Image (tube, rainbow, N blue to C red; front, top):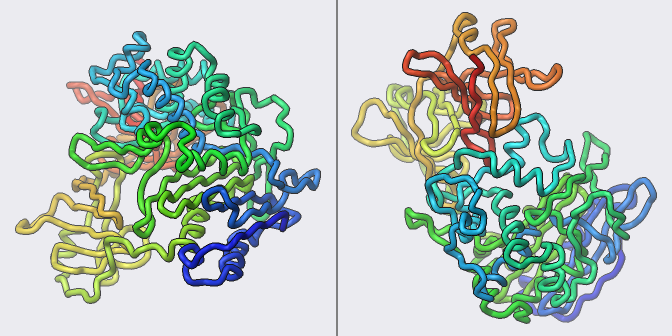
Length: 541
């Protein structure tokens, strides 16, 4: 659906040697799936405040046949985090708090993990704090199934007894970090977070159509209804919780375009811009790309400041390329479209095709004996995390179980598979570990483990009732027809599939690891899911 388009003269640098018309047509193709019977998006691409491309597509309300326009209000998902970070950086600039302050300085009743967690840890997701939404999901009430408030969030955060990892030793995205920063801003400023950000961020940037979704029942003029795909049709998928700061920003594409100008206009000062872009290194010396509410990396050698967002059926993408003074804003009410893919496609139109990954497909391969390939077959678990993989020998090649295609041998101990390098130790006859390298060059070590195939009598050992103070819930484990099941609430049953000794996975790939006492009796288990590791459940006596 065409609403409005303004295209000034822009150089071949942006058109990547294509004509203006070709670039516009290619942009139109990215959004061609949307029409007058689907949800859609609003897209604004600008250079130094001048629009290169500005269009609205699809409907904001399918039931009432209301089109998306430049006044349509969307929810920005995790794009919201950069506003929370900016609010914290303002307080740092004013000398009211410091990056390396321990958060227990401001929240003395916060759980004492025996490790210092700093404001900087929260900004960069290096705190090790579990994601409160992941913990809530263990109770059978994940986000989107009940109304969560800031008070609920605080209660969940304060209940946790352990961390995902020691602070500053790893990076793990956790909304908890940014909810804590909201609490911090309110405590230090003496204002509500909504008022502080309005006065210090929204008004100075000219963002007159932006607010926080702190009451999902409030009437918001021009708000788009969010949708998700259910097979071949759309259904409503709206957020109905009152948490914000980690997400929950209600805004328009025009307001976000104004916000993006802050990188060149220094609306918040050059010092704030530098702080927001500053990256940190982990204890092992590895630098992470997540700065303060934004991801700072490069696209074909050009600096890229970006973040995507997803809440219910809303999707967002906000990116800025300082060297090109190029701003990209994408807000959508179609949850079936990946915003990162859209962002990459737009960047390639202006900056060229992305450079091939670090790990490239080998030109040639060698022959490895069947005996050696059989040595590599087996089950492996990552040292840091819960990921388990299984290698099998089939059709004269080493393969991942249930994954088509074989590993390509580069040497007798090094293999390639679709952008990944898999290496085994040399000079040992029976490898007990493997090293994974992804296309970006990051590595992970896996150790060989023994598969667990319990009989029905052994499964009964795991049956019982288990309570979790951290997740505020109770699980009952039963054995039925030779299988172990979790009974959570009502008639809900979840099958547990044995993996390795005393460890099971459920259908959602949550890992259940059972704990035994000195007498080998099971006394509980931990559950590890995405963004929340080792949540404890104790067995009732």
